[in-house]
Image (cartoon, rainbow, N blue to C red; front, side, top):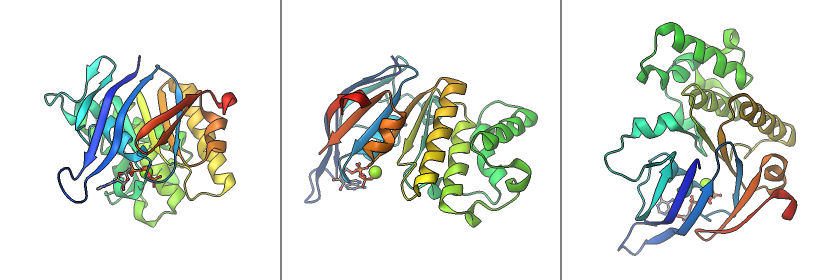
Length: 232
Ligand code: ATP
Ligand code: MG
């Protein structure tokens, strides 16, 4: 099993007038190598769930076990979690901060014990995998790119860590149909190449049916329905 979530509850701003229960007793098991489509209306809890899966948020109660390790354990370091789980957030521009694309993608791998050549190779490979030409883009600023290109740089930065689990929060939002299909086929390609577990959130059932082995529907903080795309 790749991910096991047990009785996960998360409350924003507890004991205040703004208290909101964003995750309401979520239980899930995700197999190694599965592609999971996570769909749900705005505010249903998709991003909150995703932020728990790489340790950015700690649950109010419940457990998250990744490859047998309980990541809610306070002794587990964030670096350890992030070597296993790569997340491309809903607003990927917040993941870009270096002055060149190349440095941005290299940022994660420089925290691993790798030689410069190994880091360079990872940067090149990840850029190619997301369809960014290395020579054309490596010295450009990540801030001068279109939204879709920024997302590709953020994906490349996450892939360069070679995670076992890749999570993408609304990777197709704001793209036209051709752009959406391109991102989805790149994700499929990554899955074939590395056989990783993938979770993708989206508002679009249609997009998720194209790519997922299983679809999870979130509604008001609960995982309300699990099915194969054929059943929905
Ligand atoms: P979207 O499709 O709009 O991205 P989502 O499914 O990702 O929505 P979340 O962002 O997880 O939904 O939000 C779940 C609930 O938690 C919502 O009710 C939201 O108002 C609340 N929430 C989200 N972030 C915060 C925050 N930083 N502080 C307080 N409440 C929050
Ligand atoms: Mg969201």
